[in-house]
Length: 426
Image (cartoon, rainbow, N blue to C red; front, side, top):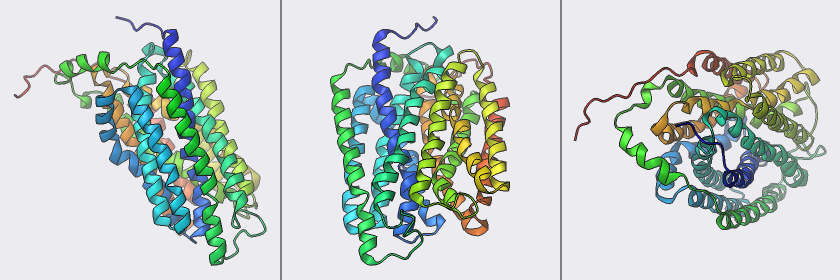
């Protein structure tokens, strides 16, 4: 039976979920400000600084399956409320991290934050994908993800003003200067106010969501799934098998570029500016992703998702090549423009990968959310940068775009799958 169009009650649900997507995007991309900030505060090399992303995305790997189990027990609404509350508690942990000026406690706070965001991802992404017609799933998820990108666009401005702009290492006059013990403690404290404000906003949103009626699809979706799951195999769906590594590899590029952009723009041969100034350009990178998702939501109603994905992956590969080989403003703007190419990649890969899964959709979605842990591998770019230089390290994201292109051209095409009706062992 064809899926019915989304009803007004689902439209209301999407509006509320847009705010949720905004907040987890905001909290995630604030890491791109923390990387240069904590790198300077604790005098880290690139590899050590990118442990921030390694630890953060490890949360996805370790917590995706437990989050899926919790979702099965609580339903979508309660899972999302719990995720928001967990994010708020995690944000408060930044206070003792600053008081102790401990990089280890900062990493712990980020892991807890990522674990809570994982629960939101596990619940919200498939929810948005299945509440309307399958034909417009990519368009719908791109539209809601655009609000996620709105959060990623504003976060660097927020972090630049309240973290980098209030720290000794974030200002032009003190950039690169060695810190005294008092300055290091003061700079560590610069994160307290921003994360307390984030905690308050998250608690307010959790309360609002608890009060709003959010349709729970879990009972209707899972009962038939359990009955049919034993007759089917996820490995028989090529689009999922190649889609899981596509999500993983794409995140390596997205997080690697975003996390190093401030440092790249600050290089004397590129932008020659302070971290606080460079953070404004980081907002343009994520603003491109936001604009691209709104545009993509419209284009995907008339253009095939795999073809649009192929086009943006080619564009990203070209821009990365220019950023590697050029210098000055050309290299800077080429890397910033990659944000526009990134825009539709995650939601489009996600919806292409779950196409045709039927009762296996939730299991497939769980694997795709686990694959977000690929963001942790962006730490490899830090290792490469320490050995051959930051500019040449963008060969890693360039290689990632080659795989995304392969997925768009071949891997995303689903093959007809007949139910496997072999007897199931008792």
